[in-house]
Image (cartoon, rainbow, N blue to C red; front, side):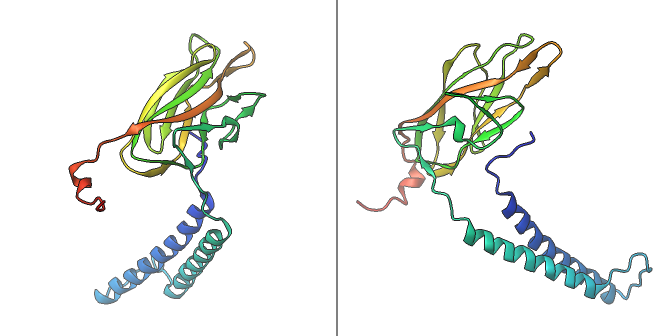
Amino acid sequence: MTEFPGVPWLKIVSNFLWIFGAALILAIISYHVFLHRWKKKCSSFFRIPLKKTLILGSILILTGGCLSLVLTMAIPAEAPLVADNTLEIEPAKMMGKKDIKKDYIIMSENGHLSTQKIHFEKGTYLVHIVTWGAAVQGETARLKIYIGLYLIADFFVPTQFEEQTFLFKSLKKENRRLRIEFLNDYFNPEKKLNRNASIQTISIKRQGTLPITSEEEKIQPPH
């Protein structure tokens, strides 16, 4: 797994900077308080300069905080797709490495494809995907389909375009990405062997709502 489409790497890095800076400051203060309280002396090898470490931590906090603020202002929150009735997803617009053909895409390497966030109401959904792939050494491409962290499918694609249907139950209102993972790429140019996964269409159809539990019933607003 080398690709994580949809992951906001810049925000992760900026948050890491200020969190690491704060941890560094807390650690160096705790270290010097410990030495002072127990009247410990340390050798020059283990001596950590308090002033320089505080300055470094402050710079990291300032840099990470400013970067997070700029990213928040410059990158507006993306409106999620809505899985209501039937939601058609264009595979060519999914994030991740892919080869785009006229009316389908090809996943030619192990990795992930991901949609933008999709809004699900509490209910049941059917995920339809039309895929195919040539069998190489007796095995076609193996795909896993996730909605958020929920694994809803793990299958080998058929050898001709064919629709696969999988059930997903959303237990609450939530925004999740649909993600497709290609697991068993194989490529041998000398023998002209290349195991790929082709994807033509993806759709999500809402089937119905789930019953309200007794705990949820207590917090329902009055009619």
